[in-house]
Image (tube, rainbow, N blue to C red; front, side):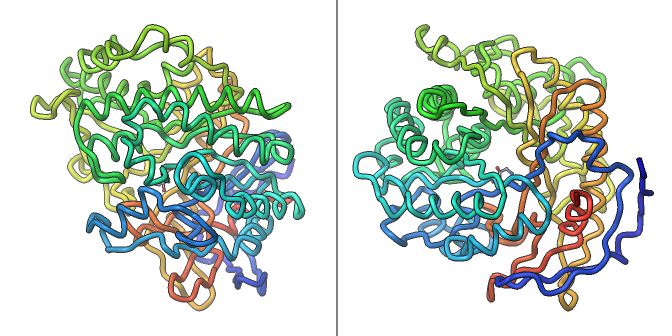
Length: 479
Ligand code: NOJ
């Protein structure tokens, strides 16, 4: 095998300009110290996206409002005051955007379905135009040879359902089942790879406990119920896919993070264990049949106490794969003043992590943490296979002519991919890797400033420019 050498200096990388209508110019890029072949011929390479973050067209073709429409339009809780009303305008430019996936040599386009495009009121009357849009997206993928991988739910709950209590109302289990049946019956003949949910930890924690994401609710009681109902829907939705879609490959996605105690003091080791339960295990253990992580303290016992016994069997599902999403590591310290978990996530700056190792989100670049969390999850005998369904980073970008030289992002991917390969070579069953994300987009409460894309988006003109990091993948994945 011809192993090409790792080139550190990425600033000489060439650029490729893509206008919405297609490719105009390509030049050279960089080489990593591994090749595509090292990951195996069946390994899936993809990019991940989410409806609210890219689609725009927030009220077009009969779509009902989602909690993110309400949250962005009616509160001032988005950093730059922006909304996803237009976002990347993917609703109209889906063809040229999916063409980018193909041009960068990825196999898979992961996208999510907006519930309120299909059911404007959350339940009841189906909006055919909403279904038609995703038919067009899926058909276009199939036409140009990209695999469409839908996620049923990526945080944009119909506002009509939030008005009835949202994730806190137990009825959501049947609302979610109905919605899942509708979309799997509509698209199940065309696409077999499905993910039920995106990061229950994030939308429950940020939306129903911290209140900094939609719907902006706070409070432990709300949180306990939202988390349990989300778990019931992860497995309930999976069961629907299994029943409705012949030969389906069924997964769901979890956010996860390797957790180190700040030092070896017993209290901080315990703080790390609690955070591990809170961030990693709460949405994973119950759905693979391990129940809630009650060994990590009273908080988790409280959640478990609220769960009717008859739910435990329903919580468990035999997933074909677990979607693993990782960005950074966490460092834990005991903090008596933090309610419930009594543990504090010490920010990288406070730990003396150098500026250039901290992303625009304030997250530490921690490729070794990626390796360690993959190994940790590799210990779950209930997880048959894993796919990394999100990994990526936001750094400030500068457009220079028709180029965006983003050496820090390129380096991030080289280091993270290298660590994933190490875990894979040591026996962790990882079948794929999806980059977060294709296009710079609406980063929730952070607005448009943090840019995660392999493709730069000018939000005034909607012009796309492939960054050097996009070219890095294009070259890595070249047949
Ligand atoms: C996780 C979420 O799934 C995605 O929506 C978000 O943009 C990325 N992480 C980056 O924060």
